[in-house]
Picture 1 (cartoon, rainbow, N blue to C red):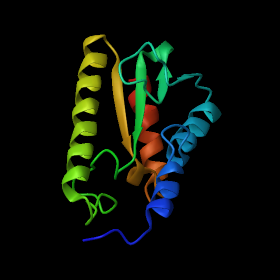
Picture 2 (picture 1 turned 180 degrees about the vertical axis):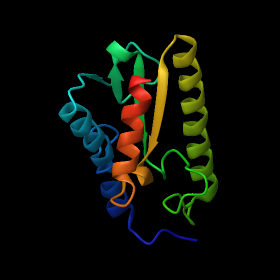
Picture 3 (picture 1 turned 30 degrees about the vertical axis):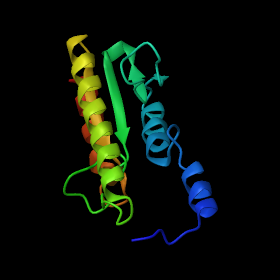
Length: 138
């Protein structure tokens, strides 16, 4: 199956996808800040450069995009019909890296909270953020 976009259009579309400061990530940061939490962003000294680092609580928060991190059983994770094998390999590599980084962080004594993009959608966001709050202070 061929791509529905030209090479130039596909290239532009892909270039617009952000790895940092995504809408779900910013949503979580604004919520935490409003509750008085102070944090660091993308700490290069920690495995995987976690999205949000709360040193006081020795906690990191990773906000994963459902597609890019292969959220199993999620309606936002659909493997593309073009270059399928390439995408499967790419997403599986991301999942493996996530697993290894989580393991390293836990071995270093960090609590790891992983949030999925779908958990931050309108109908679930309040419940998710309250759960995050409880996880941090427990």
